[in-house]
Each structure stands twice: as C-alpha cells, then as structure tokens.
Image (tube, rainbow, N blue to C red; front, side, top):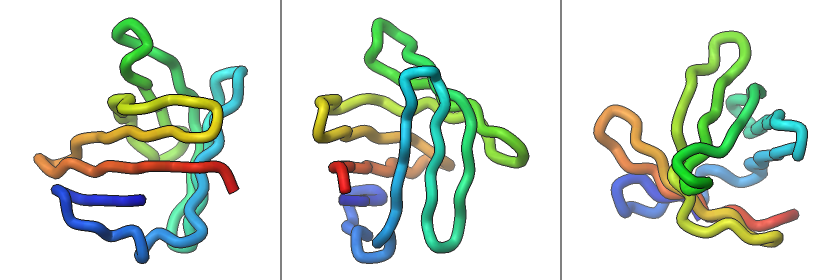
Length: 89
C-alpha cells in the first residue's frame, strides 16, 4: 500500500521491495529506481534513520507498525506525506 497525502498510488509501485538486515544495511528496488545504504533506530525505536549510499539522500522514516510480517511507516518529503504499508513477498 502506497499513499501520497492520502491519495492511493499503490498500483504505481508494483514489484517494489525493501530489505533491512540485522547488521544495519538496507536496500530497495523498483522498476525505475534502486539503492542501498545503512539504517539505525532512533528516538526510542520509533523512527529509523536511513543513510543512502552514492547519490541517495538521508531520510527519517516514522514507524507506524513494525512486526515480523508487516512494516508500516511514513516519511515527509517536500511537505508531502508518503505512507508505505509493506508485507513480505
């Protein structure tokens, strides 16, 4: 599930994946973009700080739900709110 400012754009992000390792590395892949970097919890484990490699920027994501089989979060970019609801493949 992918929303921007409450509008559903899920159909635009088919085959999107994010991977987070216990060692602090993450990656994402989509048909038009991919990247990798490192991640770490912050603010009493309520947020995750992403630091991208290469030309990727740093970003803070705000955890809404984090369980073994679901990860829901949002982030703010240019005054827009993006909500992601991820489930395993």
